Length: 501
Image 1 (tube, rainbow, N blue to C red):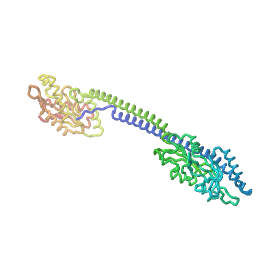
Image 2: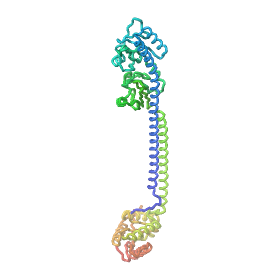
Image 3: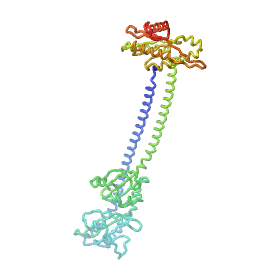
Image 4: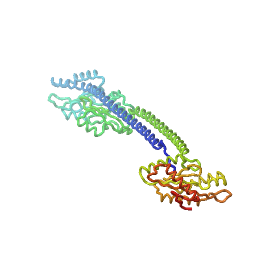
C-alpha cells in the first residue's frame, strides 16, 4: 500500500530542463569561444604568411639591386677588355687604370680583380707586384672556364682573415672567343648580412640568402647551431622540388632545427640572379599576442562556466528546498497526522479518480469500511495515548497486509476505508477476512500490563455498473459495516451477509 501524491509541479522535469539548458548554453559558449579563437589564430597565421612573403619580396628586389651594382662593374670591365682586344691587344697599363677608376667609383665593392687564363690574378687591389695569387681551383673560375655562356657566376662564401666574401665573376674572352680569364668583384658576407638585418624577424626568426640548391651562404642572425650553419639547406625537400619545378615564390611551415619550434617561412627568387632569399618568423613570437588573448578569453569563459554552474547549483538547491516545502505542505494537507494515512478529503479525491478510471476502462473495484470495535472503551480504560497507539498499530497493519495499489484512508475517529482496485467481491472478501484475522491476532504491548488486543468490523461493497457514484459505494459499505456491528463485531459483512468470527 502506498500513499499517492499528485503535484502540479514536476521537480525532476523542471530541474532537468534547467540543467540541460544551462549545460547547452555553456557548451555553446565554449564552442563559440574556441571557434572564435581558432579563426583568430588562422588570421594570425595568414598574416604571418603574408608578412614573410612581403619581406622576402622586398629583400629580393633590394638584393637584386645590390647584385646589379656588382654585376655592372664586371660588365664595364669585360666590355673594356673586349674593346682593347678588338683594337689589337690588351694594354695592361690602360686596363689597370680603368679597373682602378671603376673600383674607386664603386665603394661598396670589397675587391675588383682580373685573372689570366691560368687563374692567376693580374690586376686587382692589394695584389703586390710579382706575387702570384691563383684562383684556378675556385668553383666560379672552373665554371666560367668550362662554360662560355655561363654569364654571371656567384661563389659560395670564400674565407678571409677577417671576414668571408662572396665573389661575383664573369668570363673574359679573346677576340676569337677563347677563354682569357675572369673578372671578379667581391662583396663581404658581412655587408650582405647587414642588408638582411634591416628587417625585424624577432629573436627566433632568421633571414638567409642561398644559391639555386637553396644552400645558405649568408644568414642573419648568424647560426649558433650546426643544423643552421652556412651550407645547410634553407628549405625542406618537398619545397626544394617545387622550386626546381619553376615555382619562384611560396610559403611553408617547418620545425626550426634550433629548438624544434614551429616557424612560418617564405622563399623568393632574387630577380635576374640565381639566388633565393628565405625569411622565417617564429610562431611562438607572432602568436604570443594571440596566446595572451586566448588566455584572457579562456579565463573569462572559465569564469562564465563557474558562475553559471554555481547559479545552477543554487537554483537546484533552492528548487529542491521549495519542492521539499511543497511536498511537506502537500503531505500535511493530504495525510492524517496520527496514522500517516490519507485523510478523508484526499482519500475521497483518490477514490473518485479510481472510480472514474474503472468506469471508463472497465474492471472491478471494491471498497472496505472498517471500524475499531469498542474503541471508546479502550480510550476510557487505558487513556487516549493508548488509543492513539491502537490507531497507529492498525495503520501499520494496513501497510503490511495490503498492496501498493490499494488506497487507505482515515475517515475520522476510529473509522477507516480501503479501496481495492481491480478486485472483485470474492477476492475482496478474502482480503477483508485476512485483514480482520491479522488485526485480531495482533497484540499491543502496554507498560506494566498484559498485551492489549483489539478487533475491527468490516463492511464490504463491490462496484456494479449502476453504482457509478462514490457516495453510493460509501453508503453500501457503511450499511454493510453496521450489519457487521449488529452481527457481533469482529466480522466481515458484504451486502448483509456476515463472514467470519
